[in-house]
Length: 490
Ligand SMILES: Cc1cc2nc3c(=O)[nH]c(=O)nc-3n(C[C@H](O)[C@H](O)[C@H](O)COP(=O)(O)OP(=O)(O)OC[C@H]3O[C@@H](n4cnc5c(N)ncnc54)[C@H](O)[C@@H]3O)c2cc1C
Image 1 (cartoon, rainbow, N blue to C red):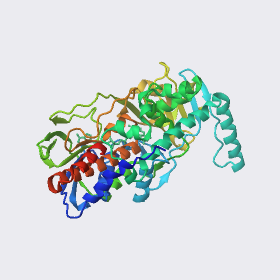
Image 2 (tube, rainbow, N blue to C red):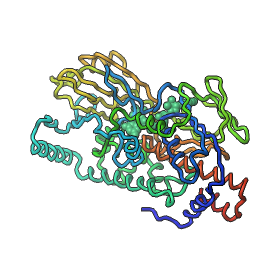
Image 3 (cartoon, protein in one colour):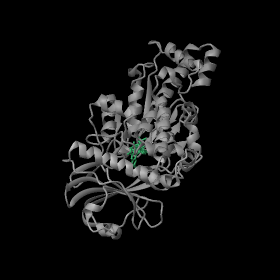
Image 4 (cartoon, rainbow, N blue to C red):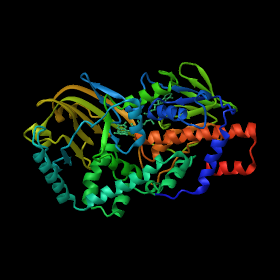
């Protein structure tokens, strides 16, 4: 655990002292994006004890007709599946808390326990095929032991070192949940990652991190590569921090929201009840000195004291007046293809579809055109729902080779997450000197439901602290020394 320095308590003490009921902070907050970032910001703003909820009026703008952004569901032949974010780690405490608060059930993700690693011409490794659900407990236990031994035989002790990297990541990540009184408020992602010791991981590649941790070349080029291709569509050249998050996402302790992960965003917005503008995209944000003027694609204008961008700025067309300058970032596109049908065993050089593993991961070789194929649901022996991840669109010719039966096909091209590189550069949370905030800068560290919530919580605290600070500057005029402390630490 990182040491807590006593000077960090001072600004928080000040915040507490300054938030007397007589200080009215009537403030309009405009949030662009109704994904988990925008919806959890709305939640965290309303759950700050430093400011009365009635002082804030929150508007959330969403260009689409649905809430949830990249947690959206997809309807494949009448069944709903997560189209984007599908798994959540058990130690993602904001998501766990949201689910509990909203009465949402946490269930096991659509399982694919049987892994095969495909190099384009054959399976280089397969785990053991799990026994049927009806098998006895002892048989299932024996299977578990044999499967673990098989993994150890191929990858040796490197496997436990890989778990060590994940454990280290999780321990440091947990610092984001310590009580607010013991946690600073951060203006930049760098400060935030340096505080809990994760910054160094963002400055070198995952491959470098794993070589340093003494993982074998085989583990890195096979199992780790399969995981980074599935979870971020990228190779082990991605940054070590996002790569370690990808490894955590292959852990056993995973869950998903029954009914779809988008219910988290929906529930948070229902709970906090901001004014929700669906089908209304924001086209420009102009700083008018004492407020921001937002113009929407409906030709409407909104005056906002505080503006929060809760979407990646990399592929959206919002004009800022004056312009803002942030480091260039490219989004990794992940093509997600959902198919109801049956894989063709011949494509994999097999004679029976039963010999194809439930999850086929692939290696970084030029002759594989997809990152993974996994079974989402088994209807009967010859009727499955599948999800395929790929870096480019899969055309009908290829899909007709890959599948012997194809009843329904849905293709989604996601600007999914940043294309990670090392060293990473980060845009600030605060995009100007006033009240223009950017949650999704934190995606350059790692992109997932939880990191959006973690960043949103910090931005909510930053907004409140700065509102209190400016109201103090206008109304109360505190001692200069106090001001200095606020500026230094916030
Ligand atoms: C294929 C895929 C798989 C993933 N797998 C996982 C996973 O298993 N687990 C996990 O935790 N994470 C996963 N992620 C990442 C996760 O989905 C994202 O990190 C997270 O959902 C981001 O939430 P957000 O609210 O920050 O952004 P978004 O969900 O992108 O929300 C931004 C919202 O802003 C809206 N918007 C954009 N521009 C405007 C505008 N000008 N005006 C108004 N509205 C606007 C968008 O329509 C969108 O609804 C995955 C992502 C993808 C694409």
